[in-house]
Length: 137
Image (cartoon, rainbow, N blue to C red):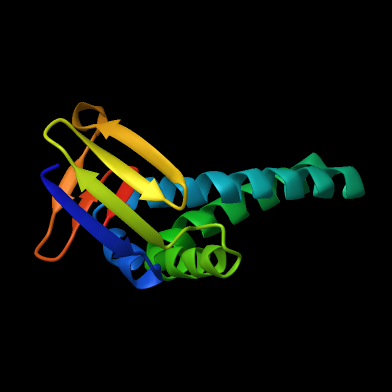
């Protein structure tokens, strides 16, 4: 083992990560809002039997979401992470062991071995180290 670190991840740390993986966060929220938009548009169509109203609603709501998430992405991500933490869906205590060709991420009783060559992107800042798909704070 080369190095071991223990982290407590919170919404503040995730919010610091947003500028580095902006596209990934943005895409995730746009996809979810588009699915919701589609379902609401179907309900509008069924209720009013009017395709024009349903399509018009879909387009307006889609454009609204594109703008809203572009402007408010950091705060939306922070709120989302906080709700996951409160609901205990995110384990905030993570231990990571670095080896020469892989790392092991430990949460509770689960260990995950990940080879470095499987990462798409990694970013090192003055205070943090980020790997796409995994947050190493």
